Amino acid sequence: MRFTGTNESGPAEPDIARAAALIADPSRARMLKALGDGRALPASMLAAEAGVSAPTVSGHLRKLVESGLVRVERNGRHRYHRLAGPEVSTALEALAVIAPPARITTLRDSSRANALTRSRTCYDHLAGRLGVALMHALLHGGLLEGHDGVHRPAQAVRDRPASYGHDHSYRLTEHGRRTLTRFGVPFDRLPPRRPLVRYCVDWSEHRHHLAGALGAAITSRLFELGWLRRGSAPRVVHLTEAGAAGLRREFGLTGY
Image (cartoon, rainbow, N blue to C red; front, side, top):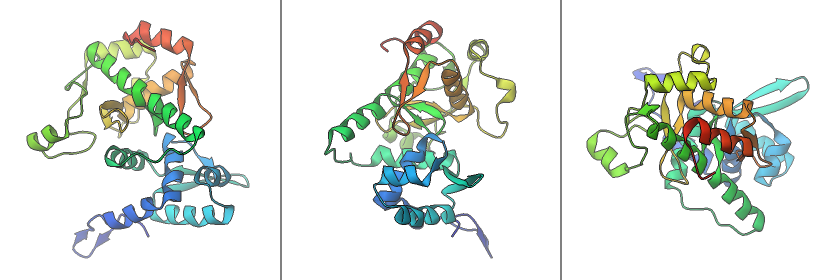
């Protein structure tokens, strides 16, 4: 049940309906969102996130693994589940841009929604208001160039065919490379096959946040420095006091 493949005449056309049907199930959608920060989680935690029983979550996970959206990792007797790659998170983020807001019926739902909007991870890079603000600071400081970070879907379609994440050509400047090298981004160890600079359209802010190898490396460095810490809910992250001071000092990011 893989989505990729070929037929006798060449590469198969993507089966969007089948992928959409898998994601459309509310329980599976909640599980995929829980995996959206790139970490591997056990089935028990995914069952709790989806609000389903252990036998039910096993059936859902089997379908997600067979489809290639999720992969299984084994550690001794334990099994953990992780998104198959950043493209799955990118697809979910793109759907979130056009999706209607979910109903909030409890204080817990409201608190989580506010936390996700404020600062979260989108697979392995920073998103939410904090991620968008960091992107703006990098552009304003001349570390990145190529666009202003504002999502204008009508303009993108008119100017050129839309290609989510790279219909605008952001570029790292020489000043940016020097500054981020001093900050601790290991440019010589970044994955060579992953694009250095990409962006996602942030579903809560409808602006761009930084993705690609550079977005992942900066986010990893923020955790390493203790400027970010993970929240109790999947994908939620919190900016520490040291982080607020450091981002203001290093990149001119204010208001946090």
